[in-house]
Image (cartoon, rainbow, N blue to C red; front, side):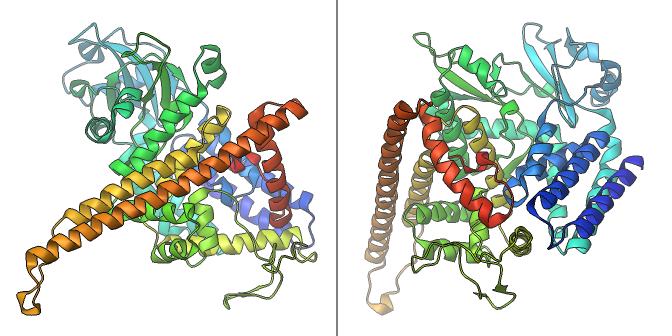
Length: 556
């Protein structure tokens, strides 16, 4: 109860702070201080309450593109290790899933200290009593989670309702989805099934390179239940420590090639997508199949949060990527509107998690037209937006567009939220290693292959029979329609790959320019390219949004 009351109090204080101090006459520094106070109080609430509140805070941190940077800076610390609980408290959690057996009947050499601890669970090492040679990782749910989940979800619903009422920001539509996902994440048997599904997808649908470059630890079901998951222990270096990876001689480029390919494969080919690929869930080890050279193999952990894409969504999302690569704004708008998005600009922000392009503060509410100038008018006049626009105006415009996007989100495919989260975390991983690969190219390649496969399957599947009353041989009609479908699929694939090739050439030219700039400026090449582009984009966006932009949001 105390944790729930603390959450209510902190949300009320944050709401009052914005209502009182976020005013039109305030300058950028005053507005920034309001954001900082709100983010800091929210962080303290999550840390003091612990448990699922850590998950809530992490979810907010991921949505940094729609929030001022203070929220990302403050809430990002929630990804650090959480305090662990003593073995004496977790032993009953293990034993209640195995009636009549003690922890010593199941494991030997069970480590007294947790080797890792997160918001809802902690991990110990042990060996199986049934096979003492097998070292395992035992993930155990913290004992208080079972007792707190009801109150915590009640607090989530109540706080969402309060924010919705105070700021007219629609949030309640998402609460049921969040609750369902959290309950799924707390079911470790489901996590074990997700783990095996991911391994099976790679084995059955992945190419030889994918099978060689990625490994999923084996699950031991005789030592697993809803609150305990036992998998094989894998020695490796966590992506949380990029400097250690470099010192060990690993290639950041090879690591990111495998990682970007893995999650692009899940998004566009298998349709079963890992929802939380943050650095702590990825290990790097020497590929056991390679003895001739240092070859990294990624070990993917923590399969609690997965989304099952429908085939329809997977095809539409691949088509959206094709339209984006071909700069087909008509197709992008059609897909966005088909998903219920009325503001296609903000939809692009939600997909790419980059700040949106604002169009001037005097958009006539409800009239769908601008009464003020655009940031970069189409007639070529680049004098910028109306100088009377204040930081307050720009931030209120951003809020209005975010509210529209959130209202539209009720109609969005539920898969999109989790796919976007996956892509955003992978982008952050790429940046932590120095942005060694072009993620967009890899995603595009798998989108092209996945779309081609789906279109060919649809073309070769059951076709309608033409009636003889219309004078058409049904076999001939079927053959022609199938052949036409295959040709259309191949043409779609070719144009997609050509667009990717052109984009790749452009990236190569940019990289070459970066190396020249590095020689002149004496900076690392990747910083030379990114620094020039990020600085230009950052200045433009800060002018439009009214607050400082975290340049990590602008990385490839």
